[in-house]
Image (cartoon, rainbow, N blue to C red; front, side, top):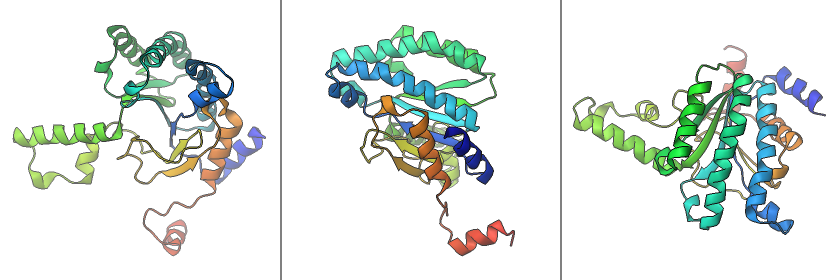
Length: 255
């Protein structure tokens, strides 16, 4: 099935440049199996591998995965500790595989909140893959959309205070340059797994015009088939960006 769908997506030219995913449902996946929550997070690593492989094969330029939000520190200490250990393990085991496949890794978020060991691994991973020009894999860790916007506003205010900017210089384009991933295309498709239908403070600025896709499947089960279903749904949508259907038709015809 995946081969025919891959071909149809490529043929219609509707493969998203940037896909962002809120990986939800790990705890509920584990609970249904009478397992501790961390078992769901470990199982979710396989789904990450499947989605990365499918994205690279489809020609997607950027894949952003929401791994740990700034609000996740509120979870039980044992779970947070296990998640940090899993993050360390993933960096130690997976980064060289990404590098061999020409994938660039970037971490989006306030990494200063992590341990010295984890911060060192992040720096090493980003440095190792910095020159790769295949797909960019972004891991959002200790990230929140409101934090992102507030950080951008603070940096702009500092520039105004220093006399490098005037208030009248500030518009959407300038503000965008101070947000995370401003050098990359905005997400075309935002996917959330696990059945919830909200974006939970994820990339609030960047997803202003993203297509939203909600899956009832828990993240550990969101493998190639489910991901391809989401990509196919995206290919069937019409993105207007404020225009009418007639205007879009005129653009297609070069009027």
